[in-house]
Length: 439
Image (tube, rainbow, N blue to C red):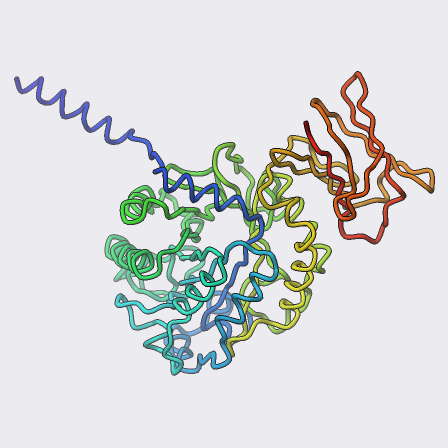
């Protein structure tokens, strides 16, 4: 009898250990909504903005922890206007916003009972900016999501990783820290109801001699138990893990590794995808970093992301006074002007399977194939007309210039190639879109 009981217990334990995460119907609907809007706005904002040296200033300059925490007393974003921010995001054509609720410095940008080191209790401003922005963003019809750092450079219970600054590790206690982390996550879920939680920092212990147990599956299950619809993603620079609802890529399109953050990342074929990129070079506000990408560059990045079935989460570092940099607002306006005409060629679309071509990329929805000519000079041309040729297996009703609606001559060859004749494309245009209407 004892042997039978032991066998049953072992079998039960094995089944529990191997149980796979099954997303709820609400979660699957949230994933569809997440992928429907290809543009998101990322906001890296915290007391580091008072230094105007980027979000890693505490670590890179090995600042005194106590002095840094005292800097919260000087953080007063008196010009913050949540409604104006949300309106600018909506007018850009974005579908969602992701704000840093807490970055690696441990400062919380929301009302929390877990630590006094937060914008309500530690600053003269005394207002819950996360709550205000969440309300304003949702009022504009956009989804609100939160970034949350898994690491903390200042809390003594967090075991120091390679990016840390403390020298005394005597109080390190990850179990205690994990309880704090879960309590804050619970506050975010129950007080603000985000559409997704965007985790970061698990790379902090990648150089440890023994694997560090972040207890991620436990954290993910905790989140889904509170809000099954809340999407979970993690910027861990590897293949998606059990319990995650979307896969993210830092500074790179899915499947690429130009930034060096995704050397072994396998692109999921089942989860929504998202790449994040800065407008300039830094994530947090940096007064010396004025090297902003042009409107054309940002739109090309958005289109190329959509062509891979991915969202683009484009980052802005707000200033300490609560305003968005003027250049960032200019870029949002430019993207918004393009989106007024062309949002239908990226939002609600999927990848086509056609690799990126010298002339550009393609996206599609149920009724149309969109050919995005990003480099018109790469098309064969006789000076008056250009020819665009792609492999194609299907039936076509018509071809037209998407912006003007003008019909275009096309031919489908017996060996499976579609040829579209175009007036000589404008080489200065940001994106000339050809719509192939499918039967």
